[in-house]
Length: 144
Image 1 (cartoon, rainbow, N blue to C red):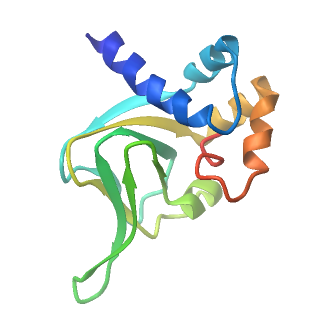
Image 2: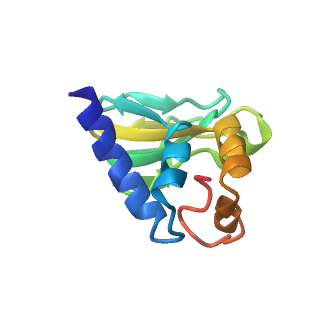
Image 3: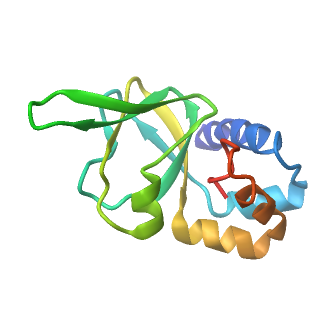
């Protein structure tokens, strides 16, 4: 059962990724070694403001939001991420500084996570991925 769940999550991940650059089956297997599946329940945090963001999340199922809360307790939504989208506090992820945003699930969600160290290893092992990081206006470029 767990294997089927992971395969389905990865299918959507690679479908979206392959819209930008086509990866061979062998390259996909290498990339899979560095991916981590995660489930979130509705209202469960992926990231809380002040923590360091250690992953980028690809939403395979569900919906997340990225937001801040001001001193009056008012929420200010920065981004929604629906199925097939990515979400992260990119500044915190890239610099290792505390996050400025909260990220939580709007509904039960299934994610594919990639850490910074995993991203770096993929770039070493699958050089084709550097093409993604050189496409600054593409939604999936940040995954790899």
